[in-house]
Amino acid sequence: MPTKDEIMAKISEVEDPEIKLGVVDLGLIYDVSILEDRNVVIRMTLTTPGCPYGPTLIADVEKAAKEVKGVRNADVELVWDPLWDPIVMATDYAKDVLGIW
Image (cartoon, rainbow, N blue to C red; front, top):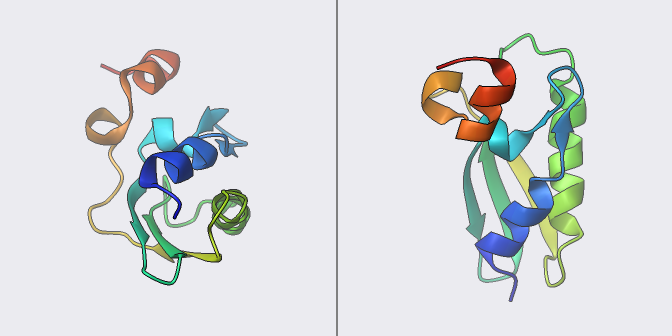
């Protein structure tokens, strides 16, 4: 059975092409659920509703999760609640790179 940590580690490799930071560091991944049938549901948001890379990021996150041994399938549920706020959700590393504190 895959673990949440394994899935998050793999998803962390997915980078926002505009900001050049990983989706996990940006705080875009809200939750990862592993169901009994080894299907994975990932709740994520985007930096803005009009993000031009949204479809690509969603597809890349699904693909990364599917690469984890034991994952049968992965689906991303795009959510807007709460709205993304880098001051609250981004890691310290991402805040340093973005110059926000």
